[in-house]
Length: 234
Image 1 (tube, rainbow, N blue to C red):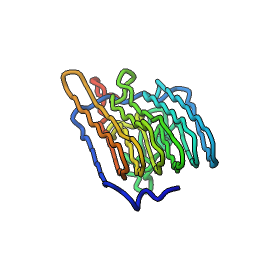
Image 2 (image 1 turned 90 degrees about the vertical axis):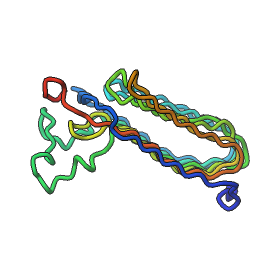
Image 3 (image 1 turned 120 degrees about the vertical axis):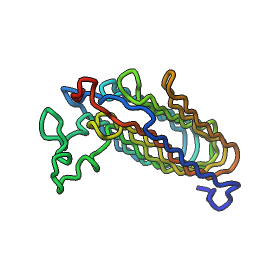
Image 4 (image 1 turned 45 degrees about the vertical axis):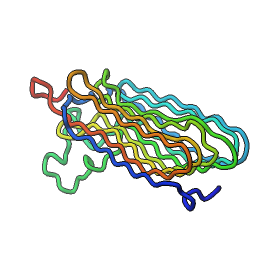
């Protein structure tokens, strides 16, 4: 793998954090919880095609991935979909024990996200195109935030990425979409993120690079969860 980091033309560091401009009710915990885990690794030379769709309307999230290329390729990937990410709450009222003064319990602060994906890629001596998208679906109770990563064509790429989406959090906590990546590449790469709410919010963030670059980027969308209008948790 060519050491792109040694011959960088530019270093761009983007930190984009969005606060709690508007609130929303809690996404209900699914009555029948389901789980999905994928752990994979690959290394070799030749053609590859990686394609993925994850849609969970109960968790108000949608994820897509497509990578197509030919060259020297290595990847390690871990992905989890967790409908029981509220597991620290012991009863069907989903009351967080941390809120009851149980100091030894830090589960509400360190609980797993509803969706988590970590991926490491090393690619060289070829051509690769594709991208990923991550969305918290507003029509199903999510924040409406969306991040799209675009790989329009690279001849070399090194990337370390972590993404999480959280929706079934208790009242007083935050729904979130967190996209964190460090990438070095020769070619064309970028991100396009949006967060829009009619008559309330219109946030759009776009970065696109063509050449030899290193980019560190953290996009964080947070929104407070509040009780329903009748003062009870949804």
